[in-house]
Image: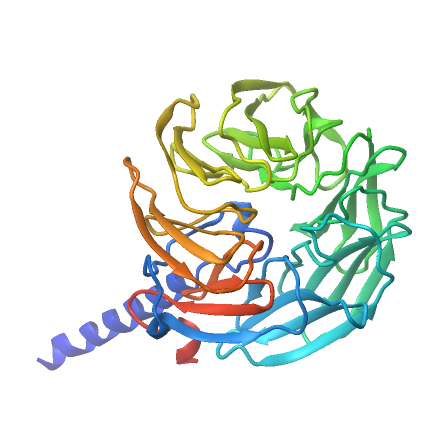
Length: 421
């Protein structure tokens, strides 16, 4: 028995280590997680009860940005409108306690009634959290370390937008990439900034039409270096070298209105939407070529999102319209596999946890549907607070930011891995 016991103990120890590493998964470092995919292997109940809520805390201020997570720290932005302060806060993933907060005064300005002064989601890496916000006279990108101390801050110039801001940064290697697509007479750019120093490495000019809130995504071609993909009405879809800012390819003239939902990648294609007013206009699937070309693989004109970002999973594309029409399509062809309506209207983007798609209505009701071959409404949970932020998942927990609160939902199978440390 002793000869069997020791290898078995070693096997169990290794299995637990691997299970722990898998449960932690990749950090939720930007809007909608790893490369904006919105996909996690963690699983959660389709309908939450009090038992499923690990904790629920009031946030210092209100806002629509999504949380980002690194290890046991959650970073989130909000606004104290009474004091006219923007806030960067760090919370404990274990119990939601406030570890620190920084407040930054600003001058109020005109924005869309559904927008907030903190709608842009931060980005985070092992060293810093990167925050973007705007005012008509100043477009700010700044970095704080994980203890809340200043790392750097830069002013990227004036910012003209009818509806306010919402531009979210991403980190690609050692470069922070931020889109700056403005309106009318504004000057539009894409910036590449050294993540350690805040020095502008490159600045690529862009045509200007209407403000874009789309967060960039990284495309991994079959050959050659990675590309950052960004969308806007004026420029269409553009692939950029993240090290130099050089335009590698462009699909121009493919959008007739604002790009608010972000591009997402899957099956060698890049999917992106546009819209205005009450909803989406159409969804494009673009296939970049190795020769610098970019061709539209297919286009859909009905029941497409304006604000919510599509989700690509394997050979399927799920897109969730603002009015609650959900479509499962073949990613390669755009052919509809199923389409059905779910309750509520939406600004939040869907995420996929295991085999379940989750999204949150503007009124704060979490809706869960199957990510399978047939439509199934699996559960609905009311959080009793308005919501426009997208769900984050990390360490075996689901984090849902409403207008005023942050909820941590336990994964199926017990507490999150953070509780065992």
